[in-house]
Amino acid sequence: MKRLILALDVYEKETALKVAGKTAEYLWALKINWPLILGSGLGIIGELKKETGLPVIADLKLADIPNTNRLIAGKVFNAGADYIITHGFTGRDSVKAVMELGDVIMVTEMSHPGAREFIQPITDRLVELANELEPFGIIAPATRPERVAYIRRRLNGDIKILTPGVGAQGGSARRVLEAGADYIIVGRSIYTSENPTESAKRFHEEIKG
Ligand code: XMP
Image (cartoon, rainbow, N blue to C red; front, side, top):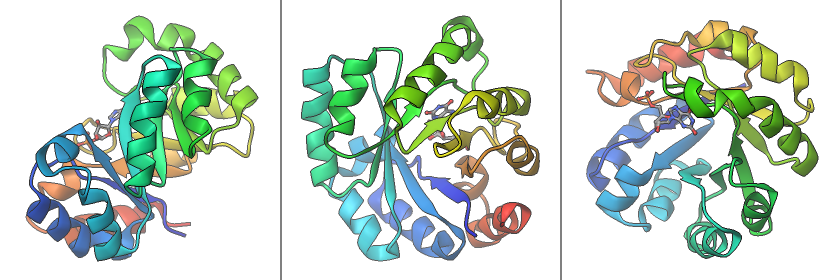
């Protein structure tokens, strides 16, 4: 089973398409973020799908009022995105506005050190919100496997856990999988590697089901 998601945080379309093409056989999905959307335009979603046949996750971390979330999500789903990453702290109405248009992955805790300041104290409530709304998945930090295990114990078993923070941010793919993650997100450790195919293969071998 494929559990690896490539985070394509580059500006240029050519680089994104090249790295995606070289690694696709080891991936479950591609994740794009603002750098690639701002650098290459929304059309990159369709181009990546055409090049690889893989699902595309738009990591927009939407955090606005329901109407604005809806306006943004509408454009992005129409461009071909299969999932949109949305913040939960803005409240259930904002998350629901995106869920009405397509599949959502909700942030419950982030991977960087600053996540301890404001997000971690409300993780329990964000997990409760996820259990109520039942999005496709949630985001939890690969940099803290013990937090992934904590979230897994509280989260409805049908909701997937996606974990960024492996590699460049220090997280171990194997450990976070053992803690209960379903999918591992890796960016720099693959796309800045001398040999992205080999790097993706190594992560895939480490975590394949
Ligand atoms: P690297 O290069 O660190 O890239 O492997 C990680 C990717 O994942 C995103 N990221 C996060 N997204 N919650 C999220 O929703 C997080 O806690 C988080 N941490 C990293 C990051 O933007 C990059 O695309």
